[in-house]
Length: 361
Image (cartoon, rainbow, N blue to C red; front, side, top):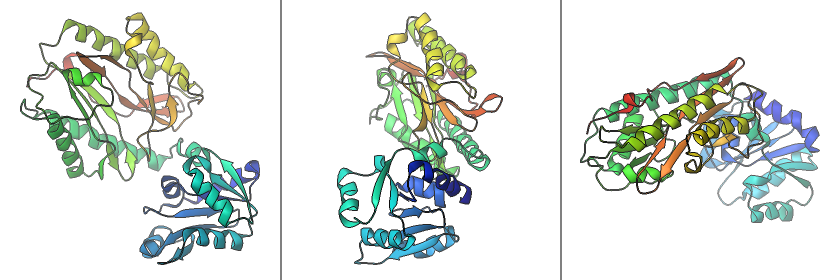
């Protein structure tokens, strides 16, 4: 964790600040190793202080033994603790995570701590989080392994009388049994026309003899997310589905092959869209190609046509082209990809060929 904090310190001069107040809980966890909530970090070139409350005093001592700690107790305000820590540090210009503060919260800082100048920043810690270290990559590998084992276990016992909601519950229960803390998002289980809704919520209705079944699921393991999608089908799926499925698969494979350091995320998105354009399906691809994963299910880099980011070694991204036909079906195929120094590594390994994704209900 010290190296991560040092990277923030190295940016203070460029931010024209002599301290940074980190308020986003996920960023606090990333920098400090603290797994609780309701806590802030004040980072200066000389020391880092975690500001929390009495509920976490013992936990912080265990998880963050090298950090200076300020604990507020019942009846004491967080803003007063922040003011005291900033005063003790002698900071005059303090950077804040503007995108994680409400307008009211930011005004509260200025009103209650008027002895400093507040410097608005955006994405300082998030930029660090985009590049995973070896420890993070190994945790993500395990998260993906749990995700894949869960899929194989649940799909092997699918029944027509199961509702979409019951299938989603089975995914979560199986993940937890295999060691995950839980799901990284509510599983998307879309039978037939429901699959045409990209962020569909599972219904209380049985899947019946569905011709197609879109499953998008992910696990959280040691705080890190995995995210995959497979679209299954039965023998009575239409020729339109089969043709579109192959186009989506070709699109995904081409996009994955384009991933390497130095390539713009928008260029990878363009590769996927180009394949679907040739198949006459560009208008049915209504979302971005993917996103980064890590401590959050959606984080940088953004894999879309409007992304400004360039891929770098250590990034872990999803590649998930999809096409959707209202009232008929949806198709999405998603894998998790590590950007390596020599190109990329596909971290997820479930079969995704048309014949390999055939089921019988």
